[in-house]
Every structure is written in C-alpha cells, then in structure tokens.
Length: 91
Image (cartoon, rainbow, N blue to C red; front, side, top):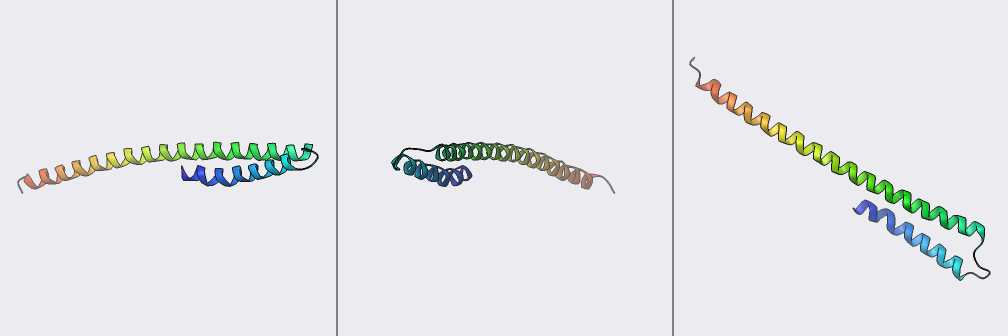
C-alpha cells in the first residue's frame, strides 16, 4: 500500500504542476505540452498497475508462506509423536 502511495504522490504532483503551468501559460497548450501531459498520465497509470501487481504478488507469497508454515508445524508435530512412540518401545 505504501509502495503505491510512494509512486502516486510525486507523479500526481508533477502532473498537476505541469498541467497548471500549461493551463496558466499565455497562448494555451501546445501539442508538445499536451503530449508530455499524456505521457505523464500514462506513466502514473503504469506505476499504479505495477504497484497493484506487486501487491497481488506479495499476497500470493504470504499465502504460500502460511501454507508452508502450516505443513512444517504438522511435520514437527508428527516428529514429536513419533519420537514419543519410539521411546515407549521396549529396548
């Protein structure tokens, strides 16, 4: 979540600054300025999509870690039970 905020705030601020400068400038917006603004908007969208993908990847990895930890705990439990049963056997 903070990754998304880290990317979004500076890019949106830059886009806002550029768009304000373009609108407030005398003579209107040139094609080059509009192209730059569109480029910045595309970059914001791309960074947001990347942040969302990374967030999804993180969730998937956390789920995998939980599953592995669950299996590890089960193995540890079986190991302890087996050890206790071996100690009960006559020598």
